[in-house]
Amino acid sequence: MEIGFLNFYGGVLGAAQDRASLIANNIANADTPGYKATDVDFTSAMSAIMANPDGTPGSSSPQVVPQYRQGVVGLDGNDVSLDNERVEAAANAGTMGAASTFLHQSTADLVTALRPNPSGN
Amino acid sequence: MSGNIFSIVGSALNAQDARMAAIASNLANVDSITAPGGVPYRAHEVVFQADPVGTDTMEADAGASDAGSLEINGGPVASGVAIAGTVLSNAPLKTTYDPGSPYADAQGYVTGSNVSQVNQMVDLVGASNSYAASVAVLQQADRVDQQMISSFQV
Image 1 (cartoon, rainbow over the protein chains, first blue to last red):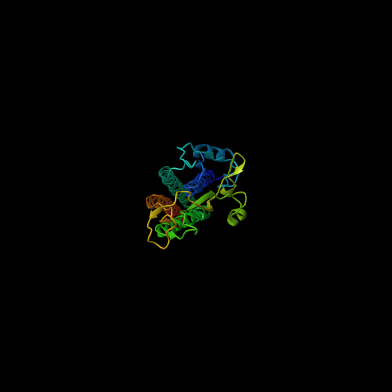
Image 2: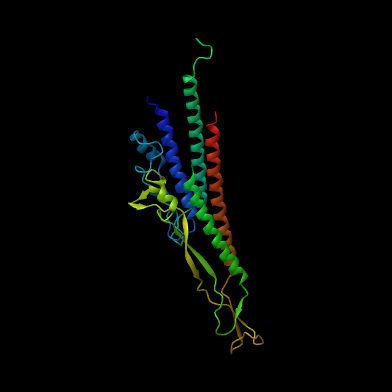
């Protein structure tokens, strides 16, 4: 049986998880000389995952290529903006929360549909 | 779930901690003086570098399906931060004219450190900001994990 929404929300959560790692990495390297902030475009990451639905949900990495963010480069060659990264982290956490809520709701509906009729008819 | 994030944030906290330790050492030695011919105290500056994927044992074990395999232009994306080393500041040493001091040289000058308190305080604010941002990421990742777990309780 094909359960499409599992793949879909798996893809959303996988892409968001990858972004969360990249954002954490950017913040960790906020003071590293010459470091350039990286990010993935969520839309293209999602379409890459959806184009390959046979892949395990969450294993988005092979198709997703992170890009350098174009920020203001400081004197030490570092272009990480802590404010930007924290905004992105907050937005990304919102995406993950929403995806997990929707996934929970869809799963609950599916479980309700699978449950035998309580009245015994 | 967010094991990758936790290790990245852990490396960042370690690095910022080392930086703040260096600042504490510099501020403690701001008034250190040296006898003629001795080695004066020079401000320590901690240099960071992006930690390449694969040096971390957790990354090596994680396998290909992990975010650790992300690549930019064929090269691995760094994961976390490491301390590249400590460099000594090249700022000029402070000298004060105090002929009565036993540490004075032939011209009567006492050689001090080259620590600038203002620079160190600015650096401390920067380190503190970066530390706080890393802690915020940690708390957010934890919150997302908690939300995930609680939303799948039946």
